[in-house]
Length: 527
Image (tube, rainbow, N blue to C red; front, side, top):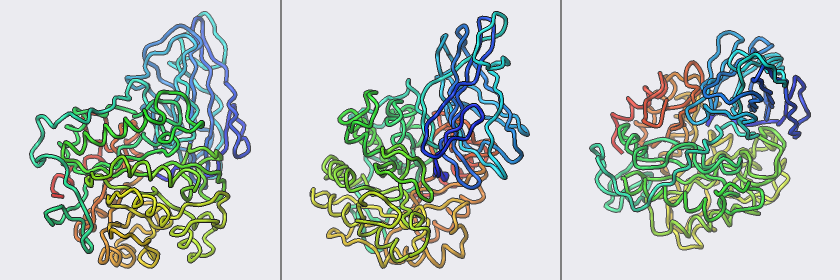
């Protein structure tokens, strides 16, 4: 997905705090029977980019419908992707308008929204905010409209989940009114040479989308999914010819550790929701990739997304404390259902943790784990995770990424783990801002891998809402027999001039131009 994380810093009331702190001071509010306060926090910042959350508190009379407005103080600051509100920007001026599920704000009610942003030169905090035209000063007056807000602090570059939208799917539901091209359940898959094939031996490419939120909503105390996970939503996917859905997960939510807020989506409840949604997708003819996205372990080095030990962001490598147990349990649950694949770790970056000093050491860390330079916790290498899955008797296809956030497969073949079942796929991520972002690089580093083993582009996308890059990736992948799942099937409201949401709503209305371009291409393809 979009580069989500780096040094964590919290900003409030115009002050940039030191990395790792979570300080949120409120800015005053306004109004006469209306008023508001704002907590603006920069959760992570890196050269040229940052993630910020804004908590709005309505101090006045209840409101139904709100727009927050503020101005960036420095040239070059902009919103690139947002969540829990519809963002728009004209020059320095930014507005964020409520979505349907968080439009109402009671007195003292809160709303939490957030965004990824870009900056050049400096990244100061906005000096003032207004809600529905009323300045947020932290006080209530008797002559202005009232304010609004929500309430979850999150270091996530992904959106906060809607409390009203944690519907879990029924595993027993069967496809109804399905578009053409879906005949029965999704096929069981296995590796044959450099292809994925069905039980009948037919070549099969996994083509579809990512559905984010299972990685972040639970750890933020915001339920399970950020929208419906039901038959209606799946039918919308089918109109796009989506035959694969990749679902990012959180290991601590699955295991039900003490780090997970008590929100009813931890441990067995989380596992049940994942199982139900997965089963419903498979019943509808859609293969599922279960992806371990956010994990445990304290890391604050290059590329860090947070300073938390808890699984509140993406870490450079999986951890020995929880990850082998996570995969053992997931494999036990889905053993025998080979329509489900396991992406063992979303985007490894031990090379960044080692300051890109020793490629051999980084590749060794990826495969073997243990003590890795720059990473303070014991790492679970890919071989350990392969062993954990196979020890359960599960023969599901496994996906394993390379370095540089899964963009670098240059030495993947030399460091491929041993699998007694011979069922491993190379996982590749490709965005316009990655270093390997041209056909020249793809031909020299990705094609040689694809000639030996199946390659799946688990994430493709671009961060400007155009479709030129994804079209070039898809066209190239089509010629190489590589499957792909685009980021992301979530209507976070920012795919205007920035961002990479595929859809504008859960009905599957494509965004302009990014979603339209991906949908048009997908409709020409057959798995």
